[in-house]
Image (cartoon, rainbow, N blue to C red; front, side, top):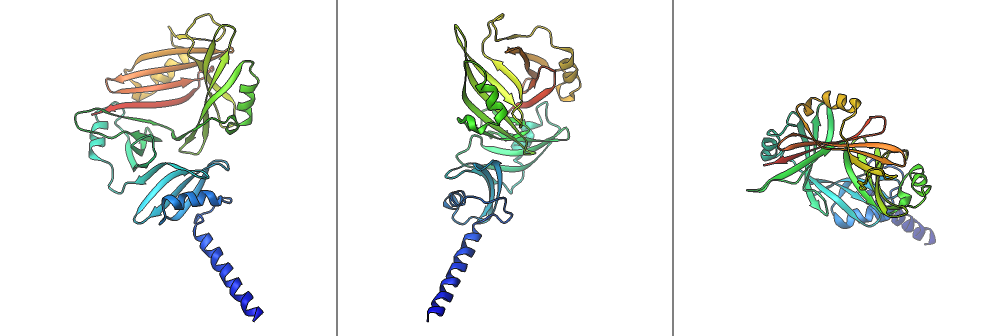
Length: 310
């Protein structure tokens, strides 16, 4: 009798483990926390074929799943899902293709259309293959008698954090080693190729003022770019309009076919703690712009395209 009871208990335990495994990703990465899996199942009780990919180690995952006949992509942590998009099976909206064709950046190919499902910052996400590179394309959607807009760059997620501990050690050291500097917030930029950059905002206390400093760190935490909103020329940390664009940057712009005929709307040089950084906005036509960030050695760090659609 006792042996029979043990056998029944063993069967129940195996069945329980099998039910647990059904909630696991079909292509598992290192252990996904139960709370994270439960968060997904609470939002999508019929969710299946869950596939997790770590975005921020031990904190945030991208999850792809199927629920009924639809497929979704979302970010999830231990208790929250956000940036959730439903894959659109109906192809690219004709209104988007027609409006994009009227801009200066019209020669690419759109694909992978997904639409906002809940708790998101943009209405649509797509992939735009432009000049041989894939970009994350964010589109607000078109409504009658109004303009819409779209942007595209290499980063598919921007995750806001208020914890300095979410930054690489080298980035934390840079901030904490500067006298009078305090961390305010950060944004973890996650690329289509899974590479990361960190955009950080900090306050820099000086003798007679406090400056707001922006910084860009690479995946290892190395400082690449920094800028300040202080426009007081001659101050120890300063930012001002650039009169003459460095030849190396002019050469880069001249070598980008999509920027042919463009005009500088903003030319800015920053000097923060002796580090020079450059920021430009170029207008290509009445509905097309490009932002460019260069480091002190004139290396292009970040490029973002913007268009107004109608």
